[in-house]
Image 1 (tube, rainbow, N blue to C red):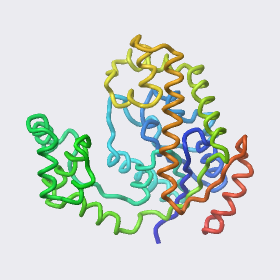
Image 2 (image 1 turned 60 degrees about the vertical axis):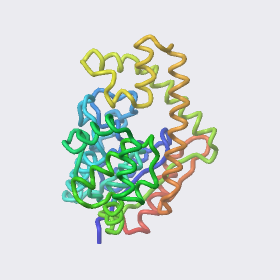
Image 3 (image 1 turned 90 degrees about the horizontal axis):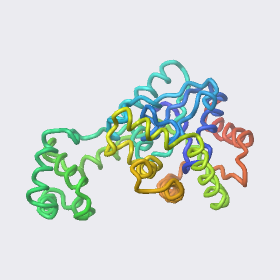
Image 4 (image 1 turned 30 degrees about the vertical axis):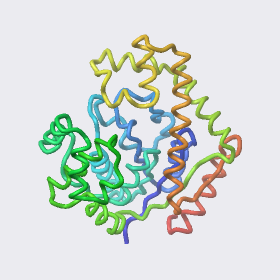
Length: 314
């Protein structure tokens, strides 16, 4: 049987960090962050990375492990995060995965194996050159002859996916459709028990998101962006395209006011929460806990404990 792990999921600002800590304390566990932006050092405020106080003595992994100048793929992330999970299991503790990056979480739980090729690889470089010389339409036609199923799902604007599908074929001789099918057919690496957090009233979630953004600004989000730039980080870095950083980069560059940036961050955060919920609704294994006006973590811990005990954790 695959080892059991706990996953705390939900939209941004739903209380996942605190819930993860409470569950880790209750079940002799350690937290693994599954957040594509909390991996970066020096980006604590804008990513809402847990502070030492919020961690409350519980070991946390995959936070501040990367230089902001780096761009991590899902493959690189899951490889590093899986080493953390395996280490926690070897020490007889329970991995508690906490985060809102659904694609990364799904890949980690399933133990997906990623086909060769990367943004800096030779094959990708050659395909990028062809894209610039021939255009996306020519490459999509080529993919149509190689992998009609994948091509049929892509639009000319999906340049990265077109390049990736061709790259997998040239690197492995296997279509990306067949590679994905084989991946889905394998049993998951972990037996994941999901606790989901949300609000009964969507307006309460929106208000919580807005309040979080206000607190980020008060805590010095603009100063955090300035510090990253002064340390030599390029404005084009992937890390600075994240919600919050992109908008306050515009403030720093003089193309937006603080008020405009705050409004934009709130809007983008609410839209992101909606996308997260759409992704999570596909997973019928999630045990949802829906807050009233204010999260009740002690009540949620009791409910979660009963759910996890029924699944063999205790």
